[in-house]
Length: 303
Length: 303
Image (tube, rainbow over the protein chains, first blue to last red):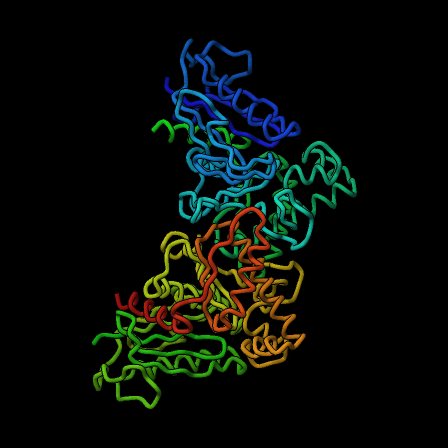
């Protein structure tokens, strides 16, 4: 069986896997992203992960959905890496989350195989299109440590003039509002990313904020409501400019489910006075969309 | 010579013309838009204009760039109408500026010729593409009585899932800010449209605001600066999401020239911390883009 190695580098967790052409995940492994230890340590951890995934197969102690399909000594044919921030095919140009500037692809994967580097969210959007039954005219919006969007205007992802489209996490929702790690102020991500809502409530994760809000905690309720309103503002703008049929929310924060989409649908409709709101729903692929997208990158590198 | 009749319905002035396939304007006429007299009177004025333009040619007392090319008794082969708001091929669905809801095309032009109805800004964007030397990846943004945008992601206009893309005039730049005629609050158009800046300074037109600001008038200076900042916010958002190569500003307000684009370029760059701003410039076709776009609509109706 032919397969690729894929790594989806998230803000707190890296997902690595071996993935067949049809999207079957033959092996899946999670490792922590050592973000607190600085830019270089994250790069080194990715590089080690890539080296481990591209070794001849000798079994694994990690839980794996289908290791029986992997023959002893088999190797992937290529590596796909999905990373956040501004990404070119050759470099991680900029990442506020990791403090990267112009990191070459070879720094992430120094292996004797073709390596393809891509944007995590656009890659996840490609996977939603390929495997998730996504229709045309969709904004795919994963909300995790950060927020970006995969713009799919006509059944294919739109990269923009320079390939930098989809930075919806850094649109100014409340101008001159909260400072954002990107250097701007009032960004959507400063209010609605998983890391922002958690930090604003002094808890480890967005899921804790959702739980506390459900229990009536005043601070968590206010922070969550502001996150939903920020998303409603950004999605109102997106809807007015691009008229999508649907907004598909992915990433860790999408696991809030109805606690997210029910108030978000209501606030989005309230922000749109003269036109209907598009359908808002959570992703079908869930948190594995990024890994499947990284695998698609690997196939493009393999040719 | 074969030609179409075209009408571009602006907030204060209607431009009507007879236009050849290559964009040559054979006859051009301006009439006031009787907006203050209510929705029905504007429709009646457009209908009268269409009737006059489609009569057999018998000369005209109006100034005309090339009446010599029109043979006595000649008639256009179709009518193209460009109107603001939400527009379907059969109806003017909604216009905040005119108070229209679901006006059928026949109400605008009750003639024995094919009639095509279209959105004024998208039509002007089509004309910029066809005749203005516009490159791909452009946002065409006419600023007149209102503001809308023609999204041109890849050399062709993008209409969205329902054909309602490009409503950038009603994106919330300062949430819960100034009330807008559309029913929302804080819209770009409430700060930066020609009618908004004029009304906020108590003068007839945006050109008066620009003149007063140049003379040091404090109110005009503040209103103009806020209009520029609102545009910078909306364009920062657009740039982050769609990464255009250029923003081309048209409409009456674009005639402010450097008084608009010089501060706008500076404020847009200031709002973008981690990526360069796209090129911002004024339209080459100027205020005739809408008329030429209406003519292109006419040709599509003619088949």
